[in-house]
Image 1 (tube, one colour):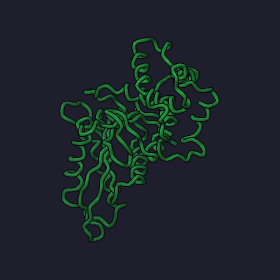
Image 2 (cartoon, one colour):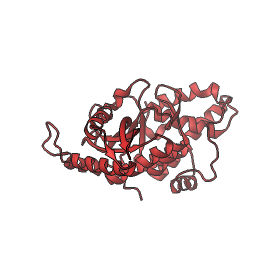
Image 3 (cartoon, helix red, strand yellow):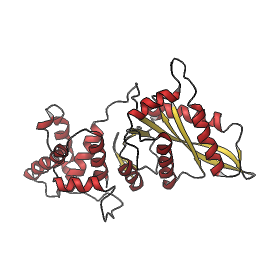
Length: 298
C-alpha cells in the first residue's frame, strides 16, 4: 500500500510523464494505469509490513546506490529494477517487491533534507488541540483539529469528541471542501492515527488509514522530526490562536453540529483580517494558495 500511494502522489505532483515513471519504477505501462485508476490495490489485505530477512543485509547497499545516484543525471540513475538486478549479482536471494518498496522509501526520505523558512503557496500544516465545551448543559472536553496555510495564514477548525482515524478522515474531507481544493503538501506530528512506527530520522511506517487518505487526495506528506514540533510552528501558533479566539469564553451550544457551524463561520470571518505587514487581507492571499492547490477532489 505504501508504494502504491507514493506512486500515485508522484504521478500527480512530479511532472514526470507516464513513460518516465514506468522507467524509474521498473514497472509496465499497464501496471501504472492500474495504480492510477484505483486508490488502493484491489484485494489488498496486508495490514503490516512483512518481514524481509533476506533484504536486511543489503539495505546499506541500497542506501549507497540511492545516495550515489544524486550525483549523476536523472537519466543515468538506477531504477528499482536495476538495483534489484545488481543485488542479485551480489548474492541477494529475495524478491523484487521488497527491493522496490525499500528504494521508494529511501528516495522519499533522502529528499527531505531541510525545512523551508519561506512558505510556498499551496502548503499546509495540521495539528490537534483540546478545549472545554458546554454542549446541551454538559461540560465536555473536545478535540479540535486545525489546518493552517502558512502562506495566507488562513485556517480551518473543526471539533470532535475524540481524535480517532475516522475523525482524521472527516476533518480532511471538510477542510478540503472549505478550502475548495487540496494542499500539495501537509505537515503533521507523529500522531498514532497517522504513523504506526518511527523507523528513522525521517522514515515513517504510515498507518493503513493514512495511506488510504493520502492515496485518495494525492497530497504529499511531511512528518516532523521526533521532539521537533517547531517544524510546523505556524499551526502550533494557530492552535493557540483558535483556542483563545473561538473557545474563550467556553462555547455554549446544543451539540457538536452547532459548534462546528459556529467554528466554520468564525474561520470565514477571520479571512477578512489583514496581517501586519501585508497589503491584502487573508482572503486575497488565500487565492494565491488555491492557485497552487491540487485539483479539487470529486
